[in-house]
Image (cartoon, rainbow over all chains, first blue to last red; front, side, top):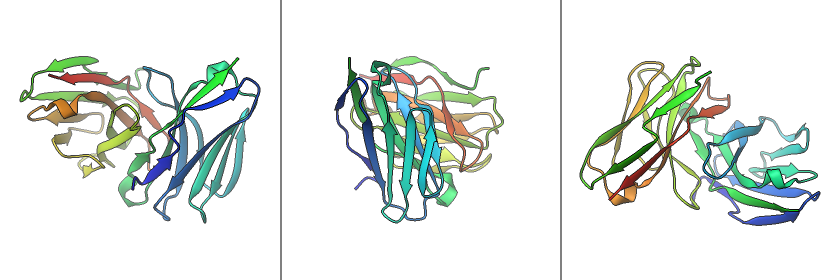
Length: 111
Length: 112
């Protein structure tokens, strides 16, 4: 079992809808959680970071963390075609700063 | 604003050949990482270095070696390339264990 799990998708939503991306992780001691966006042929870029339980909002993006359930999610409101990309969940493990990624979820926003 | 620089951008190797992928960052970051990305597999950690002088294995270290030459540079070596090592390789760096990681532009490696 991979240490960080995501639904690989593809996830397709209409323009203007809410896209919901989910991620689970195996190490209960993890402290730092990240969402990256990767366009085809490009490098990953950070969208959100979250470190404590609850919600964190930044514009159209909301990250949610539930450490008891070992679950982190990303909501994208008012989805736009430009949001079409692969979204990668990443978890920083306590021991020595190992940063582990999930397999990514491909999101397609249809006009 | 160079950030993280990887060389080369593209490489074709024959099976059994060796090569070193270079990575340098100019952000004074402590941590550096090497990942490979294959279709449908996300980013898989090969090796990482939490600080200058230290390196640790990641998820898929077999067939690779690394050197943290100094704080700026972290190289990845393939001693005897195999077709299974055909992939896109990304180098990344971060200031600390809790900070975001910044990525290089990637190296597309093909082993024939």
